Image (tube, rainbow, N blue to C red):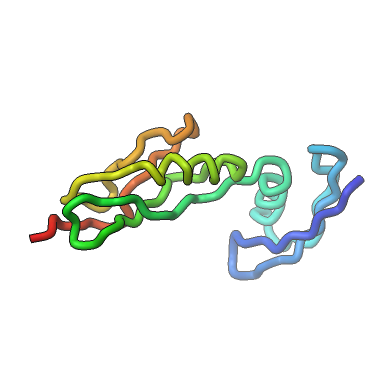
Length: 122
């Protein structure tokens, strides 16, 4: 049996959670003051996911790079692979906020979208 300590990030209370694991199975969760803490701890210990924020190259834009973000979380273990893909991505200006830059990255169901609009330079 392994114990993990986490701080819940689902609400401002920031509960200190203690999670007991038997392999990949959550045995117990202590310290949460609301149901969201339990859900967070289970997901974080069994299949953690993250929103990816980064930049991609933009051609003829008012800046050299365009900030992008995934529209939903992707598995934590796929973040570096997704970053490698995005290193090779280049888009042409103009771009609108929310525009899909990469659809369904790594088969995760998440789209990489522009997190701001950018006009064409000149």
